[in-house]
Each structure stands twice: as structure tokens, then as C-alpha cells.
Amino acid sequence: MRSIVLQHRYERDYLAAKSYQQRYVNIPIKDYLQSPLIKVVSGARRAGKSVFCLQMLQGTNYAYLNFDDSKLLQGFDEDIVTQLLQEVYPGYDYLLLDEIQNLDGWELWIEKLYRRGTNLILTGSNAKLLSSELSTVLSGRFLKIEILPFSLEEDLSYLAIPRECETPEQRGVFMHEVDDYMQYGGYAEVVKSRSLTQTYLQGVYDTVLLKDIIQRYKIHNTDDLYNVAEWLVSNVTGLFTVSSLAEELGMSSKTTLKKYCDYLSSSYLYYYLPRFNNKLQLMKKAARKSYMIDTGFVRAKAFGVSQDLGKLLENMVFVELLRRGYEIGKTLFYYRSRNDREVDFVLRKGNKVVELVQVSYDMSSPKTERREVTSLLECAEELKCSNYKIITWDEDRVVKEGIGIDVMPFWKWAMR
Image (cartoon, rainbow, N blue to C red; front, top):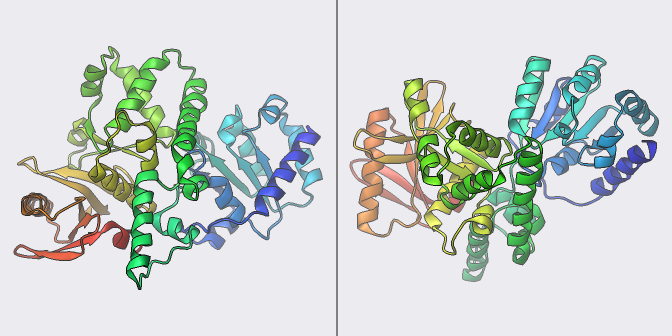
């Protein structure tokens, strides 16, 4: 076991010595790090959780263990490991435990370390596992932050592409990368090697399904799980209910289907956006919209060759709203009016709707503009909201229809 802990120290030092893109997060890092509460850094596999922690801990004395190591898991003894951590990292101030959910009974060990005053930082790739078990054992004595793949701003910074374009050539380079970002996503490992994106993301996706879902939950009927996942990625931004999806896929058990949808969401691959309604029961019964953590997965895994650019753009806007701290089912929804007209995103603060966001890839057609504006204004009237905008691919103007509506390109909105 000592050799394993020493190997992890070597891994820590090797990773910490590399150069990384600075992540833009909406928290005061210094205050977050110094808090005695447990820090939980969650998110999808390969999204950058470990790198974020290494950046956050730079210049400090910290210990490190990676629970994606099968040798560590097989021979784990908490007393021996706790002792070895002090030997290998004498006097450490922080303890970083990577992918902690892989350790059976991890929450009990964490509770002991916490009671002894250890300043803990945990990473994990399972939302429900971390939240439910930490809440049960620690009664809210933790802080949580979710790490997503690169934002557009991080992507451009990583590639050293300036956002200010002084020449048509610079503008061409800039817009080409924005398009690449929409098509291939923001996973850091392939931002500079787009030809490898599809193969890489297929590998990440399959690993999540196999290790984080099939093996963890001991699923035997894997065909049904793969069918559900394929439907969701092929119908990104689409509406579904458990009943409608069970019927379409020919699954007899709605309970099993709901579990599969929950597993896919807990693994941070998929998100399900509810329809806004002041009555909770009606909101629960309404169809939800499906989104993915990264548009690159749509290109890599969706059935069929052609992609709907409007759906990719809408998915990008959704993920950017998550980055800005909006919470699904609490401050982030979609909405349909009494006449069945839809606005893509409803943003709330407290009990008040503060903004509506509509997404339309191309509004150059008068017919399209009229449809989008009519839907937005009708929903705005019902929700009593006077703050709204339409996000497009590259249009930057104001639509005047009784009142000015800002129409702006995604890249401009995303880098505000």
C-alpha cells in the first residue's frame, strides 16, 4: 500500500507541473479553499475536476489519492492509508481525494476525517451519490461546485484566439473556432486536435455508461440502457415523458426506464429541463427537455449523419446558463403558453421570473422572426416578464415590435 500512495504522490507532482488553462468559476477560490467545510468538486468524467483542484491547491501543502486506481481500492484499509498519508505528505494542510465515489463506504471514512479536522476536497462523477450520501452523513456540512467542459471563453483563451477582431482574417479565424466549439464541444484534451474528438468522446461516453452506470448499478439488461441513451442523444433538446419514451422504445417497465434516465443524469451526461408552472404537481407531470453536457457528444454519438445546428446552439446556451449558476427546476425552466407557444429558457430569482431567453439559429427569414418574436412576447405576457432576448448564431440587432427585443450572437452573449 505504501508503494501505491507513493505512486499517487508522483502522479500528483507530474500533473501539477503541467500548464493548464485557467478555469473561470463563479466562486471566490480563496474563501472556498480556506473554509473548514468539505469541498465537493463534481462533474462529468474528463471535464477537468482534478485539474481545477490542482490549480486551486497550487502553492499549498496537500496530499492526494486517486480512487480510479483499482489497486488502491482492492487493498484499501482506512487506518493504514490514513497513517501512510501522514508519512508520505508530512504535515499536509489539505487532502484531495479524486473520484471518491469508487470507494465502497467512502462516506463513513470521510466523516471520520472531517471530525478529526482534516480539510477535505473531494471530486466525483456521480451527482446523486455524492449529494445524497454527503447530505445524509454530514447534514449539509459541505460546499459543492460543478465543473463543466470549457466554456467558449476558456476555449478561445486556451487557443490564444483574441476576441477582438480588427481584420476580416481575424474575424474568420474567430468564427471558425466558434463553429468548431459548437460542433465538437469543449473537452480540453481535444480542443487542439479536433480530428480526434469523435473517437475520444465516444470513449468517454462508453466509459461513463460501462463504469459509472452498468457496473455501479449492476445492470444486466444493457440493451435497454443503451437504447435510452441513444434516443436522448439523438433527440437533444427534444421533449419527452417517461410514458412517451417507454412506448417509443417498447419498454414495458416505466420504473426501470425512469431509473435509467436518473442514472444517465447522475453521471452528468444528460440534463432534463422541466416546464415552468407555479403548481408543482403540474410541473412534475409535464414533458421535460433533454440536453447534454457537451455538444461534442451529439456529433460523436447521435444516430444519423446530419445535425440540427439550432439544437446544438440551444444546447450550448443551456450549458452556459448552468455555468452561470442557474439550477434546473429551481431557477431554470422552459415554458409553453396557453396557445402552446414556447420560450426556451425561463430564468428565476426567488419567486420572480427575471428573464426569458429564446434561441434561434437563423432569424433572417421574416417568417422565422415573426414566429420567434410572437412566442417570446406571448410567454412574456403570461409570465409578467419584461426582460428578454433572442440568441442567434451571428445576428446582432434589435427587433422592434411594440418594444425593443435584443437579438445577439451566441459568442457575444457567452463572453459577457
